[in-house]
Amino acid sequence: MSQTKKHDFNGFTITLFQDDEDDWVAYFVEMPNVSAFGDTPYIAIDELEIAWQGVKESYLKHGEIIPVASSFQQRSIVV
Image (cartoon, rainbow, N blue to C red; front, top):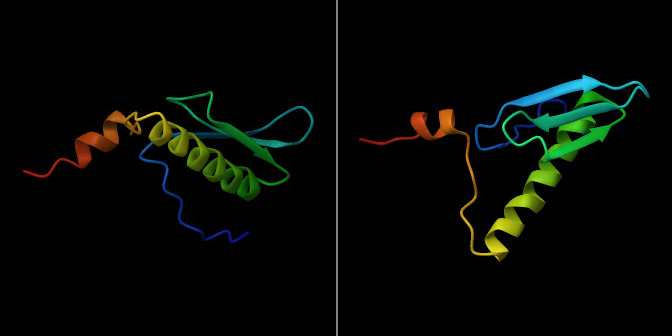
């Protein structure tokens, strides 16, 4: 996948690390249950975006509001 692809993670902070099995793991600091892994950091982040899309679809399916990071909400306020 493209290394220059822009991802939309609703302002959530991403932690990215290589585990003991040499897989790259990406997850949201604020929502650690939203995570993904891959052979490279780029694949892990691309997979995290796919996971995040699935989470958002689930929120919508259940009539719930899709969360955004609190810092993202503060920056998004229009006065």
